Image (cartoon, rainbow, N blue to C red; front, top):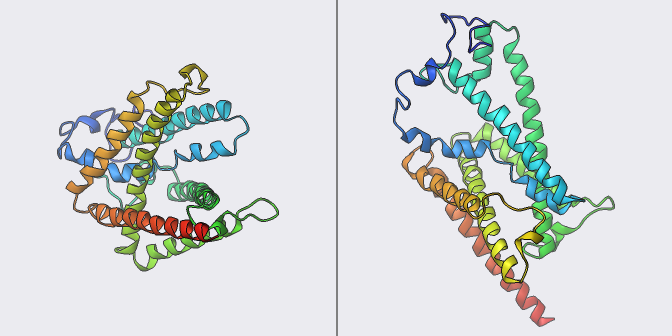
Amino acid sequence: LAVVGVIPLKGSQGAPGLTNLTKGGWFPTGFGGVFTTMLTVNFAFSGTELIGITAGEAKEPEKTLPKAIHTTLWRLIIFFIDSIFIMACLIPYKQAGVTESPFVHVFNMMGIPFASDLMNFVVLTAIISAGNSGLYASTRMLWSLGNEGTIPVVFAKTNKRGIPAISLLISMLGGVFSLLTSVYAADTIYLVLVSISGLAVVFVWMAIALCQLKFRQKWLKEGHTEDELKFKTPLYPFTPWFAFIASLASCLLIWFDPSQRVALYATIPFVIFCYVAHHFYAKHQEKKQTSL
């Protein structure tokens, strides 16, 4: 309504329409800005892969998962992409910043009272939801790794209610310590953690795409047919290859942004450390089984 002029905006004459999208050209600061913001965008869209984690606990995954995927897609389009589009229509890019929520800024321009309080409520609700899903995903992953023997088996132990309490406790402690870094080391450790998590999400997406490609190849090699698949990836193999290449490109393009280059410095050594630690742990377990 504000974009088309039904709701007047303070300091604006008439309906802004799409003028803020084209004022100064389509890319007034260059096309490179699209690439340098990819890590932040990927971080914001992280969590969509959690649908796959729930497959192991779904009663009828062939029915519930496609429905969840479609629902998630439409929610992303409506609540993420559409909202960003509307914000871009209402706020000139030279006025956009990070010191104030763009939603609060727009609501204040509309004259809506208690705009900041309303958005704080929405943001806090979203944070609790994201924290809840992240805690579930972390606990579920630790349990899976422990159950497979990739990490100590103690992480796979569950209580009487079937909850992997140790994995849950470790995940909660990790979340608390990460939260403290935003207060005591916002410019150092916190920045590195955010960078690692943003880039790690992209690595996970790349792994998912590769797994999809390898799964279909192995499925056919074992004598199965595509008709036996209960859910087929649309536009295979274009979809997984596009996901892999686009994710890889977003990783490489981070190098051209000095402020986000720390993600590569921090994440690559972290991944190498995880592989090395897993290698020695696997060797230790192998020797242990041989001695028995």
